[in-house]
Image (cartoon, rainbow, N blue to C red; front, side, top):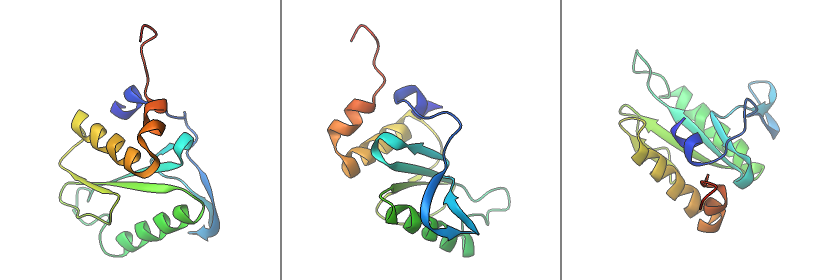
Amino acid sequence: MLLGERIALPHRVNAIRINRTFYGKPEVWPDIIIPAVNVAIEYDSPGRDKTAHRGLKEVSDREKDAALEEVGWAVIRVRADGLESLGPHSIVTAGVTDALVDEILTMVAEIRGAAAVAALLNRDPGD
């Protein structure tokens, strides 16, 4: 919701068709997509049992990222609650805050350029 307050996000649709199958499907479903700049955002947490997004699930996450990158999408992985970074586009965080949204937008600017992010920002009509 915090990201949606800053930039326009699509409603309900977040499927991206890929060039291969992923768990038998020709598409993947990232948590958040920003189609205007072809950036997907995945939010990973270890869950109650502290095992999610580790081991084989981490391998699956990397495969999903690779499939998205093959079709021109960049993936930002937000890794929470003690999960380690999965690469150059990972943000390790303790929780969802305005500062995290700032980090995400900074990373989008690093990936796609500051002008692309500026075009995404929600602005008051008086600006």
